[in-house]
Image (cartoon, rainbow, N blue to C red; front, side):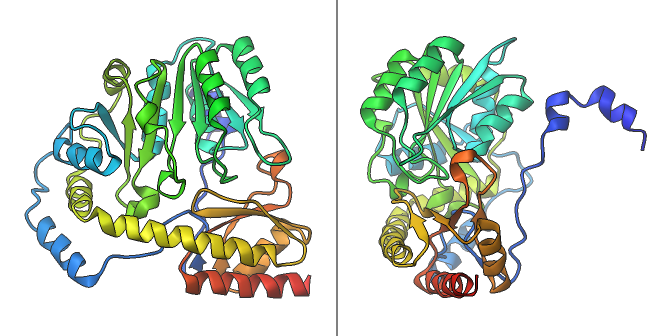
Length: 361
């Protein structure tokens, strides 16, 4: 093909990017994507199938997803009239937030390392992206450096992942308050891992005119449905909603999510189990020689190995266990890997495989 056509018409920021890579997990213990490893009981699955039998897939979905929104407000503990906007996962919400405030010479800012989509979406849309390094020793938010960067670059949006991915830590609330006070534009608190964190900014969302809070059902067990939600002042959500594509939540996702939210206790039981399993896995990793592991308030653990992260990743994969290698993604993630908390059996397979890899290195 004539590369001249590509170079003429594909924007330079897009040509510089690499597509988001999702590893093939066929036949492997899948501990790379922060998914809930637990399924639903068979009777509940049968009840769900019965509900789906009555979904009219020949019709467009409800454009505002009102039934689902009501269930999400109850699940989140928000008032029945709380403004909420739904996205096809958090990724779409990040994209439409950025599209809402796009303009020549504008900046998006986030602490780094963090969720890669903040930078990727910003650069595709023509923003300048400013990453402010977290503190090297504990990945804490450097509020002084962040506020200096805000004063210098005047970002349209600041993204703060709480807990942060891939480090797993919560940011200090006073530090976040300082950033909210300093930011001239919108501050997005991304709580994708809120079911595992034990605290939330959701009930502070109306104290700040420049703050919205983003959550998702993906980590709670509905990753395949792609349901993200954005809470915040009605004035902000009305503007962001203008950018949202119509019918962005399909009928099967709306019906399925509304159904399982009627059984929200199951999701809460599963996430409580994952939190307990996380602490057990953290202790097991701490016992391994040559491993440094950081505490987590999410459903994954970040750890560093002195044996070479890529060699450890390859060794685990050869033994049928897939995790995420982060070495090279950011200087602070040198020789780091990330493992999702699985079932007790999956966690045991991971630890056994890791011991073998470390012993043979």
